Amino acid sequence: MIGPKGSRPPKSEVEQFYDSRYRDVSASVKATSLDESAISRPGTVRFFETLWGKNKRPDPGCSISTLEVGCGLAPFSRYILNLYPKAKVFATDISSVALEKAKSLCGCLECYQTDIAQGLAYEDCSFDIVFMTAFIEHVFSPLNALREAFRVLRPGGSCFITTPNTQNLSSRLSYLVRGHVPRTEGQNKPPWEWEHIRFFTKDDVEQMLGIAGFRESTILLGYEVPVSKLREVLSIVFPSWFCHLIIALARR
Image (cartoon, rainbow, N blue to C red; front, top):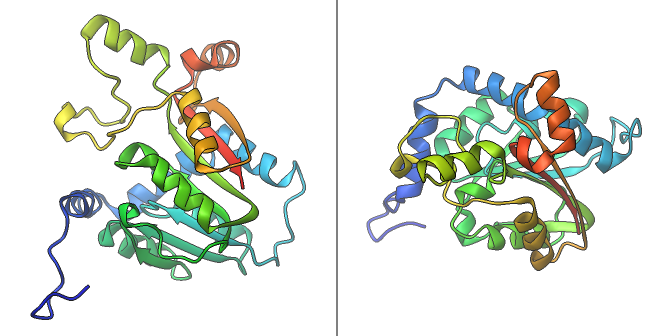
């Protein structure tokens, strides 16, 4: 939108906040850490196995269409392009700085600046996959964001979501011992500087997906970084207590 004098409207507080975040972090360092943690974690591997069937990936020459919402440096979009060079891959974020860095890492990306509160600027039934990884905990209305994902997905399309699990043991102990709401970010910042403004359990995510219109969902609990063998066993036996990540695959 152009103002009365042809100038761009002032950036929103949220846009300025995330611009600052991505301006302060080296694109190469952030990209590496995101790729390793987001793409290689066990839950992500299981997502793609569930999506396409184990050892049954689509032909590399296929032209699937994907959208990564709140993309940051777009690790999943770049991952898809590595697997499927002919894919139509789109990425959106509220931060123009993040999008510039994502574009510099992969020139084939179609990047668009979007405030999810205003909806997604895409037609209904446009995409085969929508990625919302580490996203819904950042937005004021996560339900509306999921409804937008549902709208732009084609029938049979899938939405991949990750968000912190606030039922884990460390979150419970933090509240019990210190009286603090769970700190779900990796950085040790005071609460008034947190990026995460919404907090979820597995049941919360499952309920939201149903309200948003998704006909079926598969929800796993996992972890973001490699863990010890003991922690891995405990995560299998008591997932809600020892897993820090909710991983959901929802189909339209």
